[in-house]
Length: 486
Ligand code: NAD
Image: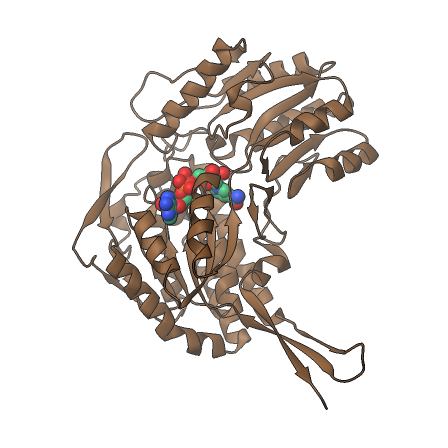
């Protein structure tokens, strides 16, 4: 699809998607969507207002009862059709993601496959919302537990996986029988709008999925969280914004699922298969140019193998093709915006000023767009800011260690707890260390953990709740207990 252009997507809505149709913002406002490879304007979309947010909640409320009452099999089949339509349109979707987010096409294609899989998985789960029956310990009655949809859900998603973060919420919400309002990130609203069209084509009834692009995120989300009809917030984004939304949600005691930031440690023990560890590091660091909550952020490598590991990693990073995401040869696209590229640059400069050595990269290439060169830093001092912050770019800081207790303590020394990676040839050590790492997920001799069939989520300030797997649908269901005498 070399000749892809936005205008070839004739069914892409560029307005709000409310009650099954595209509508302009109530004040007719719009905002620009930029191409991160050039900084130029791609197009504009409607800029939702608080009134529009209320119209979305009205539409979700009008559709709620009928959708919750639909046969689970029927909801399953709609989701299955959405999986098939996404798969059929995967090339268009990948190009659209690459265009507005900047990521390289192979990453965008990977995202589309991953994103579509949430619809297939939750099509399969929709018919398995099992409750339970037991006899009360006293023998006086039966305890019947039903699973019911939690209610209208507000879904707020980030720009780094514009398709997958949406389907990971919409899939289980629809399977559970909830209606939703999706507020996509302002950098990447186009993918969410195309998803609205695809879901409509798959047979999702009007009002079940509403999409509200909005620059004034705080105002529209706050208004929805203060509407008593909204019972659920599922947020993926930074821990900073997550904290704000938890406070907002407290006013109406809205049920919250939070997928927040990460600061993943990547441990390489002296007995690891170094080829496998370098391959894993490339995936864990360079998928999406490092713009992933699961990105390896701190490399802890045993002193015996640190020089070898760092050299091999630097060779691989140096060989990567940097360019516009939509070019077929590109392996590393631009970062999403100027702010991101400048933040990565600041973190690297800070590390170097503190004593780190640059093995490869270490700056922004001389070209237009929001690029950062793949970078490996060694001798990074333990207190460096780059080890405490989410880098969200193609930079691998390496720290050496000599002792298992020491590395576990360093890995856990963060407020985040999303994912950790461990490479070792000793399975017993791998499992022992996995148990000791304080994170919701561990990649053991693997640089990629994301799987729609597995529970994704974090401990500590990386979040609350799980997405994917059987657990993912439970976040959209509420147990109702009926005490029965029979
Ligand atoms: P962000 O927190 O800036 O924005 C996320 C979403 O929240 C966007 O839609 C944004 O418009 C909206 N938002 C921002 N301020 C808001 C406010 N005051 N009220 C309501 N909504 C608001 O995050 P981002 O920069 O889009 O994404 C990157 C972050 O997301 C990183 O921290 C990354 O780790 C995290 N992330 C986490 C996961 C996970 O599953 N744990 C997955 C992907 C990304």
